[in-house]
Amino acid sequence: MSTEIIHPARSLQGSLVLPGDKSISHRYAMLAGLAEGTTKLSNFSTGADPHSSLGCMAALGAEVKDLGTHIEVTGVGGSFRQPTGDLDCGNSGSTMRMLSGLIASHPHTFTLIGDHSLTVRPMERIRKPLEQMGARIALVDGHAPITINGGPLKAIDFDTPIPSAQVKTAVLFAGLQAEGTTSLSEAITTRDHTEHALRAFGAKLTRETGERPRLVIAGGQKLKAIEATVPGDLSSAAFFLCAALLFPDSNLILDSLGMNPTRSALLDVVAALGAKIKVLNVEEQHGELIGTIQVNAAPALSRGPMEISGALTAQLIDELPVLAAIAPYTRHGMIIRDAKELRVKESDRIDLVARNLRAMGATLTEHEDGMEIPGGQTLHGAQIDSGSDHRIAMAFSIAGLRATSATEINGAEAAAISFPEFFTHLRNLCPQ
Ligand SMILES: O=C(O)C1=C[C@@H](OP(=O)(O)O)[C@@H](O)[C@H](O)C1
Ligand SMILES: C=C(OP(=O)(O)O)C(=O)O
Image 1 (cartoon, rainbow, N blue to C red):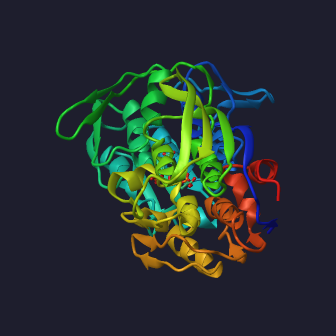
Image 2: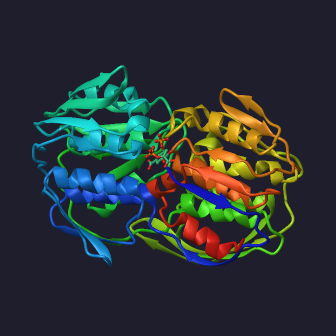
C-alpha cells in the first residue's frame, strides 16, 4: 500500500488535458469487441477499470492492441467465443454489470470475477432483468462471482427500479441481441453514454416521449467499427475543479473535456460554490460534447448550504466524495441526500468520507442516505484511509490542500483505478 503526503498549497494554476472518460471508454471497448471490423480509439482512459473491460474483450475473442497513440480493437463480428478462464472485472462495477448484458445472449458459460470490493457489491440488479430475458444467472448471496449460462434472449419492457446507468446499459446491450424489441424507462435519467455509443456503432435506438420516456431498441442489429477520440473525463476533472474553489487566484484551463449534459451538473454546482466557468469552445463527436473551459475563483452565488438531492444526486454520484471533502471549506456548507447508492460503491463512501473528515477535525452529521456538513470550518492534516477506493484517495488529497498541516493519504495507489496521473497533475497545478 502506498502513501502520498499532501502539503498545504497556496494556489492552483495551469492547464490540463484529462485522460479519456472512464464511462465512455468502457462502452466503446465493449461495443468495439462485439462489432465487426477494427475500432480505433484515441485518448482511451488510462484507468485500470476500462482496461479490465479491454481484457475481458480479449478473453472473449476480440483482438486488442495498445499502439501507444491509440487502442485498436478488432471485434468478433457478433459472436463471442467461450473464454478459457474467468472474466476478470478487477475493481470495476461497470465492467461486471454492463458485460453481463453484453454476453448473456451468447451460448456459453461465463464466470465473472472481481477483487474483494467488487465481490461485495450488489449484482441482483442485473440478474433480475437478464433472467426475465431468458438468461440463467447464478450469484453468491446476491454478489459475484457471477455465472451466466447464456443463450437466446427475448425482449422485455423494463422500468429501472434504481437510477443506474450500468443497469440501463446491461438491459440495452442484451436487448440489442435479443429477439424482439426491448424498451426501458428510468424514473431519473442517468448518464446517456450508452445511447450515444450504440448509435455511433450503427445501432438504431429511439426515445419515445411521454409521461415516462422509454428507450426502444430492436434486437438482431449488427454493429460496425468506429474511429473515435474519447473526451476527457469530467469526473477526474472534478478533483481539480473543486481544488480551484479553494484558492482566491485559481486559474485552470481544461481542454478536450467531456461535457455531456447528463454528466455536467458538477459545473453548475462548482459555479454556485464560487467558480467562474468560461466555456471557450464546444464540439460534438459521436453524440458526445467536448469542450475547453477556463475556471477562475469568484464569489459564491449560493446564499445558504448547497443542497444536493433527488435527480441532482444521481447526476453527481461520482463527484459527491470530492464535493463532500471540500464542503467544510465552503461558506455555507453542503447537504447531500438521496445518496444511499454511495454506500455500495467501491467502499461505503458515506462512512469513509465522514470518518476521514472527522479525522481532519471537521464537524458533520451523517445520515443513512447522505450527510450535512457545515461550512466555514478549518481542518488540520490527518492520516486518511482511502479504503482502497480511488475517489476517496483523490477527494482527500484535495481536502489536504487547504488543511493547516500535512495530510497522509494511505492507500493512494487506488487512484490508478480511474486516474493514474492524478498525483503528478496535482503537484504540477498546486506547487506545495
Ligand atoms: O454507467 C457508468 O459508467 C457508471 C454509472 C454509475 O454507477 P451506477 O450505474 O451503479 O449508478 C457510476 O457510479 C459509475 O462510476 C459509472
Ligand atoms: C463507482 C465507480 O465505478 P464502478 O461502479 O464502475 O466500479 C466509480 O468510478 O466511482
